[in-house]
Length: 487
Image 1 (cartoon, one colour):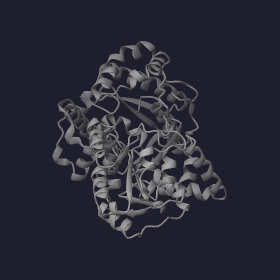
Image 2 (image 1 turned 45 degrees about the vertical axis):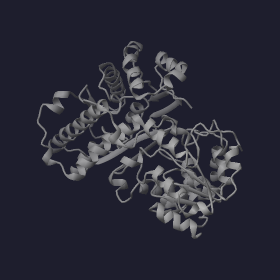
Image 3 (image 1 turned 90 degrees about the vertical axis):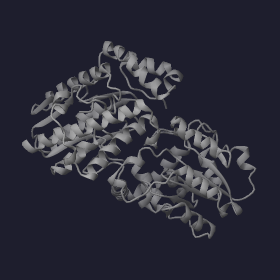
Image 4 (image 1 turned 180 degrees about the vertical axis):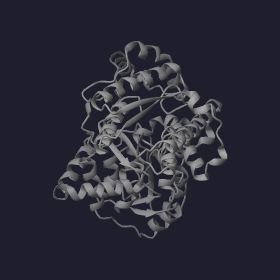
Protein backbone atom coordinates (compact mmCIF):
# COMPACT_ATOMS: atom_id res chain seq x y z
CA UNK A 1 0.00 0.00 0.00
CA UNK A 2 1.36 3.42 -1.01
CA UNK A 3 1.08 5.53 2.15
CA UNK A 4 2.16 9.05 1.18
CA UNK A 5 -0.34 11.58 -0.16
CA UNK A 6 -1.60 11.74 -2.85
CA UNK A 7 -0.45 8.17 -3.53
CA UNK A 8 -2.48 6.78 -0.61
CA UNK A 9 -5.75 8.41 -1.67
CA UNK A 10 -5.12 7.33 -5.27
CA UNK A 11 -4.31 3.80 -4.08
CA UNK A 12 -7.55 3.50 -2.13
CA UNK A 13 -9.70 4.91 -4.94
CA UNK A 14 -8.08 2.77 -7.62
CA UNK A 15 -8.28 -0.33 -5.42
CA UNK A 16 -11.99 0.35 -4.95
CA UNK A 17 -12.41 0.59 -8.72
CA UNK A 18 -10.70 -2.78 -9.23
CA UNK A 19 -12.67 -4.25 -6.30
CA UNK A 20 -16.03 -3.21 -7.77
CA UNK A 21 -15.09 -4.36 -11.27
CA UNK A 22 -14.33 -7.82 -9.89
CA UNK A 23 -17.67 -8.51 -8.19
CA UNK A 24 -16.41 -7.33 -4.82
CA UNK A 25 -14.00 -10.24 -4.44
CA UNK A 26 -12.06 -10.16 -1.21
CA UNK A 27 -9.58 -7.29 -1.35
CA UNK A 28 -6.34 -7.61 0.62
CA UNK A 29 -4.06 -4.66 1.39
CA UNK A 30 -0.44 -5.25 2.35
CA UNK A 31 1.09 -2.63 4.62
CA UNK A 32 4.85 -2.31 5.06
CA UNK A 33 5.24 -2.29 8.85
CA UNK A 34 8.89 -1.15 8.91
CA UNK A 35 9.71 -4.21 6.80
CA UNK A 36 11.90 -2.75 4.05
CA UNK A 37 15.52 -1.80 4.68
CA UNK A 38 15.19 1.06 2.20
CA UNK A 39 12.37 2.25 -0.06
CA UNK A 40 11.54 5.08 -2.45
CA UNK A 41 9.78 7.08 0.29
CA UNK A 42 12.24 6.42 3.11
CA UNK A 43 15.63 5.75 1.53
CA UNK A 44 17.53 5.98 4.82
CA UNK A 45 14.96 3.90 6.72
CA UNK A 46 14.19 6.51 9.38
CA UNK A 47 11.76 5.30 12.05
CA UNK A 48 9.88 8.62 12.24
CA UNK A 49 9.04 8.48 8.54
CA UNK A 50 7.93 4.85 8.88
CA UNK A 51 5.61 5.96 11.68
CA UNK A 52 3.87 8.44 9.38
CA UNK A 53 3.48 5.82 6.65
CA UNK A 54 2.02 3.16 8.94
CA UNK A 55 -0.36 5.64 10.60
CA UNK A 56 -1.69 6.90 7.27
CA UNK A 57 -1.97 3.38 5.86
CA UNK A 58 -4.05 2.18 8.83
CA UNK A 59 -6.23 5.28 8.67
CA UNK A 60 -6.74 4.89 4.93
CA UNK A 61 -7.60 1.20 5.19
CA UNK A 62 -10.15 1.96 7.91
CA UNK A 63 -11.99 4.24 5.46
CA UNK A 64 -11.72 1.65 2.68
CA UNK A 65 -13.22 -1.08 4.86
CA UNK A 66 -16.18 1.14 5.77
CA UNK A 67 -17.00 1.42 2.06
CA UNK A 68 -15.88 -2.09 1.11
CA UNK A 69 -16.42 -4.51 4.02
CA UNK A 70 -14.96 -7.49 2.19
CA UNK A 71 -11.39 -6.35 2.73
CA UNK A 72 -8.41 -7.18 4.92
CA UNK A 73 -5.15 -5.52 5.99
CA UNK A 74 -1.99 -7.63 6.30
CA UNK A 75 1.00 -6.17 8.11
CA UNK A 76 4.35 -7.13 6.57
CA UNK A 77 7.12 -7.00 9.16
CA UNK A 78 10.86 -7.23 8.60
CA UNK A 79 10.91 -10.79 9.92
CA UNK A 80 8.41 -11.76 7.20
CA UNK A 81 10.86 -10.62 4.54
CA UNK A 82 14.28 -11.45 5.89
CA UNK A 83 14.04 -14.38 8.33
CA UNK A 84 14.01 -16.86 5.47
CA UNK A 85 17.21 -17.15 3.44
CA UNK A 86 16.83 -16.04 -0.17
CA UNK A 87 18.33 -18.24 -2.89
CA UNK A 88 19.60 -15.76 -5.45
CA UNK A 89 20.28 -18.55 -7.93
CA UNK A 90 16.53 -18.92 -8.43
CA UNK A 91 16.26 -15.57 -10.21
CA UNK A 92 16.62 -15.17 -13.97
CA UNK A 93 18.94 -12.64 -15.58
CA UNK A 94 15.91 -10.60 -16.66
CA UNK A 95 14.59 -10.49 -13.10
CA UNK A 96 17.98 -9.52 -11.68
CA UNK A 97 18.19 -6.75 -14.26
CA UNK A 98 14.67 -5.48 -13.53
CA UNK A 99 15.33 -5.33 -9.78
CA UNK A 100 18.57 -3.43 -10.37
CA UNK A 101 16.84 -1.02 -12.75
CA UNK A 102 14.15 -0.38 -10.15
CA UNK A 103 16.79 0.50 -7.58
CA UNK A 104 18.70 2.67 -10.06
CA UNK A 105 15.48 4.40 -11.09
CA UNK A 106 14.69 5.22 -7.45
CA UNK A 107 18.16 6.56 -6.70
CA UNK A 108 18.25 8.36 -10.05
CA UNK A 109 15.01 10.17 -9.16
CA UNK A 110 16.32 11.03 -5.70
CA UNK A 111 19.63 12.45 -6.93
CA UNK A 112 18.69 13.36 -10.53
CA UNK A 113 21.59 11.16 -11.53
CA UNK A 114 21.99 8.90 -14.56
CA UNK A 115 25.41 7.36 -13.88
CA UNK A 116 25.32 5.03 -10.87
CA UNK A 117 29.12 4.71 -10.94
CA UNK A 118 29.23 8.15 -9.28
CA UNK A 119 27.47 7.04 -6.09
CA UNK A 120 29.38 7.69 -2.88
CA UNK A 121 29.64 5.10 -0.10
CA UNK A 122 26.48 6.31 1.64
CA UNK A 123 24.37 5.88 -1.49
CA UNK A 124 26.07 2.60 -2.37
CA UNK A 125 24.82 1.33 0.98
CA UNK A 126 21.33 2.59 0.17
CA UNK A 127 21.52 0.78 -3.16
CA UNK A 128 22.55 -2.45 -1.42
CA UNK A 129 19.70 -2.27 1.11
CA UNK A 130 17.16 -1.34 -1.54
CA UNK A 131 18.21 -4.27 -3.69
CA UNK A 132 18.00 -6.67 -0.73
CA UNK A 133 14.47 -5.40 -0.08
CA UNK A 134 13.52 -5.95 -3.72
CA UNK A 135 14.52 -9.61 -3.63
CA UNK A 136 12.80 -10.08 -0.27
CA UNK A 137 9.56 -8.50 -1.54
CA UNK A 138 9.55 -10.75 -4.59
CA UNK A 139 10.15 -13.85 -2.47
CA UNK A 140 7.41 -12.95 0.01
CA UNK A 141 4.75 -12.45 -2.64
CA UNK A 142 5.89 -15.43 -4.69
CA UNK A 143 5.15 -17.55 -1.63
CA UNK A 144 1.82 -15.80 -1.06
CA UNK A 145 0.70 -16.24 -4.68
CA UNK A 146 1.66 -19.91 -4.56
CA UNK A 147 -0.64 -20.60 -1.61
CA UNK A 148 -3.47 -18.17 -2.43
CA UNK A 149 -5.56 -17.58 -5.54
CA UNK A 150 -4.92 -14.00 -6.62
CA UNK A 151 -6.42 -12.38 -9.71
CA UNK A 152 -5.27 -8.77 -9.47
CA UNK A 153 -2.40 -6.87 -7.86
CA UNK A 154 -2.58 -3.07 -7.43
CA UNK A 155 0.88 -1.43 -7.46
CA UNK A 156 2.04 2.18 -7.22
CA UNK A 157 3.86 3.40 -10.36
CA UNK A 158 5.86 0.23 -11.00
CA UNK A 159 9.07 1.96 -12.02
CA UNK A 160 10.67 2.19 -8.57
CA UNK A 161 12.38 -0.34 -6.30
CA UNK A 162 9.22 -1.07 -4.27
CA UNK A 163 7.12 -1.77 -7.37
CA UNK A 164 9.44 -3.46 -9.84
CA UNK A 165 9.69 -6.80 -7.97
CA UNK A 166 5.89 -6.83 -7.57
CA UNK A 167 5.48 -6.58 -11.33
CA UNK A 168 7.95 -9.41 -11.86
CA UNK A 169 6.28 -11.71 -9.33
CA UNK A 170 2.89 -10.94 -10.92
CA UNK A 171 4.21 -11.99 -14.33
CA UNK A 172 5.67 -15.20 -12.93
CA UNK A 173 2.37 -16.17 -11.27
CA UNK A 174 0.07 -14.98 -14.11
CA UNK A 175 -1.54 -12.31 -11.93
CA UNK A 176 -2.83 -9.11 -13.53
CA UNK A 177 -0.90 -6.12 -12.24
CA UNK A 178 -2.56 -2.72 -12.20
CA UNK A 179 -0.38 0.37 -11.91
CA UNK A 180 -1.51 3.81 -10.75
CA UNK A 181 0.00 7.26 -10.34
CA UNK A 182 -0.89 10.87 -11.09
CA UNK A 183 0.69 13.89 -12.76
CA UNK A 184 0.68 17.44 -11.41
CA UNK A 185 1.07 16.32 -7.80
CA UNK A 186 -2.11 14.27 -7.84
CA UNK A 187 -4.25 16.36 -10.17
CA UNK A 188 -4.26 14.06 -13.21
CA UNK A 189 -4.66 10.36 -12.27
CA UNK A 190 -3.54 7.58 -14.58
CA UNK A 191 -3.57 3.81 -14.45
CA UNK A 192 -2.69 0.82 -16.59
CA UNK A 193 -3.04 -2.94 -16.67
CA UNK A 194 -0.07 -5.24 -17.31
CA UNK A 195 2.17 -2.51 -18.70
CA UNK A 196 4.18 0.50 -17.55
CA UNK A 197 3.01 4.11 -17.93
CA UNK A 198 6.33 4.88 -19.60
CA UNK A 199 5.66 2.23 -22.22
CA UNK A 200 5.81 3.68 -25.72
CA UNK A 201 2.87 1.48 -26.75
CA UNK A 202 0.81 2.62 -23.74
CA UNK A 203 1.28 6.26 -24.77
CA UNK A 204 0.46 5.53 -28.40
CA UNK A 205 -2.64 3.39 -27.77
CA UNK A 206 -4.26 5.67 -25.21
CA UNK A 207 -3.54 8.73 -27.31
CA UNK A 208 -5.14 7.19 -30.38
CA UNK A 209 -8.21 6.03 -28.43
CA UNK A 210 -8.69 9.51 -27.00
CA UNK A 211 -8.07 11.15 -30.38
CA UNK A 212 -10.69 8.99 -32.11
CA UNK A 213 -13.18 9.68 -29.33
CA UNK A 214 -12.67 13.43 -29.67
CA UNK A 215 -11.85 13.49 -33.38
CA UNK A 216 -14.30 16.27 -34.31
CA UNK A 217 -12.89 18.55 -31.61
CA UNK A 218 -9.26 17.46 -31.90
CA UNK A 219 -7.93 20.48 -33.80
CA UNK A 220 -9.66 22.87 -31.42
CA UNK A 221 -8.35 20.92 -28.43
CA UNK A 222 -4.84 21.01 -29.87
CA UNK A 223 -5.08 24.78 -30.29
CA UNK A 224 -6.21 25.13 -26.68
CA UNK A 225 -3.37 22.92 -25.47
CA UNK A 226 -0.73 24.82 -27.40
CA UNK A 227 -2.16 28.10 -26.14
CA UNK A 228 -1.77 26.89 -22.56
CA UNK A 229 1.82 25.85 -23.23
CA UNK A 230 2.98 29.14 -24.71
CA UNK A 231 1.12 31.02 -21.97
CA UNK A 232 2.56 28.84 -19.20
CA UNK A 233 -0.73 27.38 -17.97
CA UNK A 234 -0.69 23.92 -16.35
CA UNK A 235 -2.63 21.17 -18.09
CA UNK A 236 -0.98 17.75 -17.86
CA UNK A 237 2.29 18.83 -16.26
CA UNK A 238 3.88 21.70 -14.39
CA UNK A 239 4.40 24.93 -16.33
CA UNK A 240 8.17 24.68 -16.31
CA UNK A 241 8.59 27.69 -18.62
CA UNK A 242 6.86 30.15 -16.28
CA UNK A 243 10.10 32.03 -15.51
CA UNK A 244 10.91 32.55 -19.18
CA UNK A 245 10.16 35.93 -20.75
CA UNK A 246 7.63 35.68 -23.56
CA UNK A 247 9.29 36.34 -26.92
CA UNK A 248 12.74 36.78 -25.40
CA UNK A 249 15.84 35.30 -27.05
CA UNK A 250 19.30 35.78 -25.59
CA UNK A 251 21.34 38.35 -27.54
CA UNK A 252 24.21 35.92 -28.04
CA UNK A 253 21.83 33.71 -30.00
CA UNK A 254 20.47 36.56 -32.11
CA UNK A 255 24.02 37.50 -33.13
CA UNK A 256 24.72 34.11 -34.69
CA UNK A 257 24.99 34.34 -38.49
CA UNK A 258 24.34 30.85 -39.82
CA UNK A 259 21.01 29.01 -39.80
CA UNK A 260 20.38 27.83 -36.25
CA UNK A 261 20.02 24.28 -34.96
CA UNK A 262 18.48 24.35 -31.48
CA UNK A 263 19.19 21.23 -29.44
CA UNK A 264 16.65 20.65 -26.66
CA UNK A 265 17.83 18.37 -23.87
CA UNK A 266 16.03 16.96 -20.86
CA UNK A 267 16.67 14.85 -17.81
CA UNK A 268 16.35 11.22 -18.82
CA UNK A 269 16.86 9.62 -15.39
CA UNK A 270 13.33 8.15 -15.61
CA UNK A 271 13.67 6.64 -19.07
CA UNK A 272 17.23 5.33 -18.68
CA UNK A 273 16.09 2.74 -16.14
CA UNK A 274 12.70 1.68 -17.53
CA UNK A 275 13.93 -1.79 -18.48
CA UNK A 276 12.18 -4.27 -20.75
CA UNK A 277 9.50 -1.81 -21.91
CA UNK A 278 12.30 0.16 -23.60
CA UNK A 279 14.53 -2.87 -24.15
CA UNK A 280 14.64 -2.50 -27.94
CA UNK A 281 16.09 1.01 -27.78
CA UNK A 282 19.39 2.52 -26.76
CA UNK A 283 19.36 5.86 -24.92
CA UNK A 284 22.39 7.90 -25.89
CA UNK A 285 24.39 10.16 -23.62
CA UNK A 286 23.01 13.57 -24.63
CA UNK A 287 26.18 15.54 -23.91
CA UNK A 288 28.42 13.14 -25.85
CA UNK A 289 25.96 13.27 -28.74
CA UNK A 290 25.87 17.08 -28.72
CA UNK A 291 29.66 17.29 -28.69
CA UNK A 292 29.75 15.03 -31.73
CA UNK A 293 27.13 17.13 -33.53
CA UNK A 294 28.80 20.50 -33.00
CA UNK A 295 32.24 19.20 -34.00
CA UNK A 296 30.97 17.56 -37.18
CA UNK A 297 30.79 18.87 -40.73
CA UNK A 298 27.42 20.41 -39.79
CA UNK A 299 29.34 23.32 -38.25
CA UNK A 300 30.17 24.42 -41.81
CA UNK A 301 26.49 25.15 -42.45
CA UNK A 302 24.89 25.75 -39.06
CA UNK A 303 25.26 27.45 -35.71
CA UNK A 304 24.12 25.63 -32.59
CA UNK A 305 22.48 26.38 -29.27
CA UNK A 306 21.72 23.91 -26.48
CA UNK A 307 18.53 24.64 -24.52
CA UNK A 308 18.39 22.90 -21.15
CA UNK A 309 15.01 22.09 -19.61
CA UNK A 310 14.04 24.38 -16.69
CA UNK A 311 13.55 21.29 -14.53
CA UNK A 312 17.22 20.41 -15.00
CA UNK A 313 18.19 23.00 -12.41
CA UNK A 314 18.03 20.17 -9.87
CA UNK A 315 20.12 17.62 -11.76
CA UNK A 316 23.11 16.05 -10.07
CA UNK A 317 26.10 18.37 -9.77
CA UNK A 318 28.27 16.00 -11.81
CA UNK A 319 25.93 16.33 -14.80
CA UNK A 320 25.67 20.10 -14.40
CA UNK A 321 29.48 20.29 -14.42
CA UNK A 322 29.48 18.46 -17.75
CA UNK A 323 27.08 21.02 -19.20
CA UNK A 324 29.29 23.82 -17.91
CA UNK A 325 32.25 22.27 -19.70
CA UNK A 326 30.13 21.90 -22.83
CA UNK A 327 29.38 25.64 -22.64
CA UNK A 328 33.05 26.25 -23.52
CA UNK A 329 32.33 24.75 -26.94
CA UNK A 330 28.76 25.83 -27.74
CA UNK A 331 26.09 28.25 -26.55
CA UNK A 332 24.28 26.58 -23.65
CA UNK A 333 21.11 28.13 -22.27
CA UNK A 334 21.01 26.87 -18.69
CA UNK A 335 17.75 26.02 -16.84
CA UNK A 336 17.35 29.52 -15.37
CA UNK A 337 17.68 31.19 -18.80
CA UNK A 338 14.96 33.73 -19.64
CA UNK A 339 14.96 32.68 -23.30
CA UNK A 340 11.46 31.67 -24.38
CA UNK A 341 11.54 28.07 -25.62
CA UNK A 342 8.84 28.75 -28.20
CA UNK A 343 10.46 31.93 -29.48
CA UNK A 344 13.67 29.94 -29.86
CA UNK A 345 11.87 27.24 -31.85
CA UNK A 346 10.43 29.88 -34.15
CA UNK A 347 13.90 31.44 -34.57
CA UNK A 348 15.50 28.09 -35.44
CA UNK A 349 16.01 26.39 -38.77
CA UNK A 350 15.88 22.94 -37.25
CA UNK A 351 15.18 21.32 -33.88
CA UNK A 352 17.18 18.39 -32.52
CA UNK A 353 15.91 16.56 -29.44
CA UNK A 354 16.29 13.32 -27.51
CA UNK A 355 13.58 12.28 -25.00
CA UNK A 356 12.06 15.75 -24.70
CA UNK A 357 8.35 16.34 -25.30
CA UNK A 358 9.28 19.62 -27.04
CA UNK A 359 9.27 17.66 -30.30
CA UNK A 360 5.46 17.76 -30.23
CA UNK A 361 5.34 21.54 -29.92
CA UNK A 362 8.08 22.13 -32.49
CA UNK A 363 6.28 19.94 -35.01
CA UNK A 364 3.02 21.74 -34.26
CA UNK A 365 4.85 25.01 -35.03
CA UNK A 366 5.80 23.44 -38.39
CA UNK A 367 9.50 23.12 -37.74
CA UNK A 368 11.50 20.08 -38.84
CA UNK A 369 12.53 17.94 -35.88
CA UNK A 370 15.33 15.38 -35.80
CA UNK A 371 15.07 13.04 -32.83
CA UNK A 372 18.09 11.00 -31.75
CA UNK A 373 17.07 7.84 -29.93
CA UNK A 374 13.70 6.88 -28.44
CA UNK A 375 11.00 8.90 -26.69
CA UNK A 376 7.45 8.34 -25.49
CA UNK A 377 6.18 10.11 -28.62
CA UNK A 378 8.26 8.36 -31.26
CA UNK A 379 5.26 6.46 -32.68
CA UNK A 380 3.38 9.68 -33.52
CA UNK A 381 5.44 10.51 -36.64
CA UNK A 382 6.27 13.99 -35.36
CA UNK A 383 10.03 13.79 -35.88
CA UNK A 384 12.66 12.44 -38.25
CA UNK A 385 13.84 9.48 -36.17
CA UNK A 386 17.44 8.29 -36.08
CA UNK A 387 19.18 5.83 -33.78
CA UNK A 388 22.60 7.46 -33.65
CA UNK A 389 24.34 10.82 -33.81
CA UNK A 390 26.11 9.80 -37.03
CA UNK A 391 22.73 9.15 -38.67
CA UNK A 392 21.53 12.57 -37.52
CA UNK A 393 24.60 14.28 -38.98
CA UNK A 394 24.12 12.56 -42.33
CA UNK A 395 20.39 13.30 -42.42
CA UNK A 396 20.86 16.99 -41.65
CA UNK A 397 23.94 17.57 -43.82
CA UNK A 398 22.29 16.11 -46.92
CA UNK A 399 18.93 17.77 -46.14
CA UNK A 400 17.05 14.47 -46.03
CA UNK A 401 14.86 15.63 -43.17
CA UNK A 402 11.36 17.02 -43.61
CA UNK A 403 8.57 18.68 -41.68
CA UNK A 404 6.41 15.86 -40.38
CA UNK A 405 2.58 15.76 -40.47
CA UNK A 406 0.87 17.93 -37.88
CA UNK A 407 -1.58 15.15 -37.05
CA UNK A 408 0.85 13.44 -34.66
CA UNK A 409 1.04 16.56 -32.51
CA UNK A 410 -2.74 16.94 -32.58
CA UNK A 411 -3.20 13.33 -31.44
CA UNK A 412 -0.83 13.82 -28.52
CA UNK A 413 -2.29 17.19 -27.51
CA UNK A 414 -5.85 15.79 -27.60
CA UNK A 415 -4.79 13.04 -25.21
CA UNK A 416 -3.28 15.59 -22.82
CA UNK A 417 -6.48 17.67 -22.86
CA UNK A 418 -8.91 14.77 -22.51
CA UNK A 419 -7.10 12.14 -20.49
CA UNK A 420 -9.89 9.87 -19.21
CA UNK A 421 -8.55 8.02 -16.18
CA UNK A 422 -11.50 8.56 -13.86
CA UNK A 423 -11.51 7.54 -10.18
CA UNK A 424 -14.91 8.20 -8.61
CA UNK A 425 -13.75 7.94 -4.99
CA UNK A 426 -10.74 10.23 -5.44
CA UNK A 427 -10.87 14.02 -5.22
CA UNK A 428 -8.13 16.54 -5.88
CA UNK A 429 -9.31 19.48 -3.76
CA UNK A 430 -6.31 21.71 -4.40
CA UNK A 431 -2.57 21.27 -4.65
CA UNK A 432 -1.51 19.28 -1.59
CA UNK A 433 -5.06 18.43 -0.45
CA UNK A 434 -6.74 15.16 -1.47
CA UNK A 435 -9.55 12.93 -0.26
CA UNK A 436 -10.70 9.35 -0.67
CA UNK A 437 -14.45 8.98 -0.34
CA UNK A 438 -14.58 12.55 0.93
CA UNK A 439 -12.20 11.73 3.81
CA UNK A 440 -8.69 13.06 4.41
CA UNK A 441 -5.89 10.68 5.43
CA UNK A 442 -3.51 13.14 7.11
CA UNK A 443 -1.09 12.13 9.84
CA UNK A 444 -1.36 13.98 13.19
CA UNK A 445 0.84 17.01 13.80
CA UNK A 446 2.99 15.33 16.46
CA UNK A 447 4.09 12.62 14.00
CA UNK A 448 4.88 15.23 11.36
CA UNK A 449 6.96 17.23 13.86
CA UNK A 450 8.91 14.17 15.00
CA UNK A 451 9.78 13.38 11.36
CA UNK A 452 11.20 16.86 10.61
CA UNK A 453 14.86 16.02 11.47
CA UNK A 454 14.77 12.88 9.30
CA UNK A 455 13.31 14.77 6.35
CA UNK A 456 15.80 17.62 6.75
CA UNK A 457 18.60 15.07 6.81
CA UNK A 458 17.53 13.72 3.42
CA UNK A 459 17.45 17.23 1.91
CA UNK A 460 20.93 17.96 3.27
CA UNK A 461 22.41 14.68 2.04
CA UNK A 462 20.96 15.28 -1.43
CA UNK A 463 22.30 18.85 -1.47
CA UNK A 464 18.76 20.10 -2.05
CA UNK A 465 18.43 23.73 -0.94
CA UNK A 466 14.84 24.02 -2.14
CA UNK A 467 13.59 23.79 1.45
CA UNK A 468 15.48 27.01 2.26
CA UNK A 469 14.22 28.91 -0.78
CA UNK A 470 10.62 27.80 -0.13
CA UNK A 471 10.64 27.67 3.65
CA UNK A 472 7.18 29.24 3.98
CA UNK A 473 5.56 26.57 1.80
CA UNK A 474 7.25 23.73 3.68
CA UNK A 475 6.25 25.25 7.02
CA UNK A 476 2.60 25.47 5.95
CA UNK A 477 2.78 21.86 4.71
CA UNK A 478 4.07 20.82 8.13
CA UNK A 479 1.42 22.73 10.08
CA UNK A 480 -1.58 21.76 7.94
CA UNK A 481 -0.48 18.27 6.89
CA UNK A 482 -0.42 19.12 3.19
CA UNK A 483 1.95 18.20 0.37
CA UNK A 484 1.98 21.32 -1.76
CA UNK A 485 4.86 21.62 -4.22
CA UNK A 486 6.53 24.65 -5.73
CA UNK A 487 5.05 25.63 -9.06
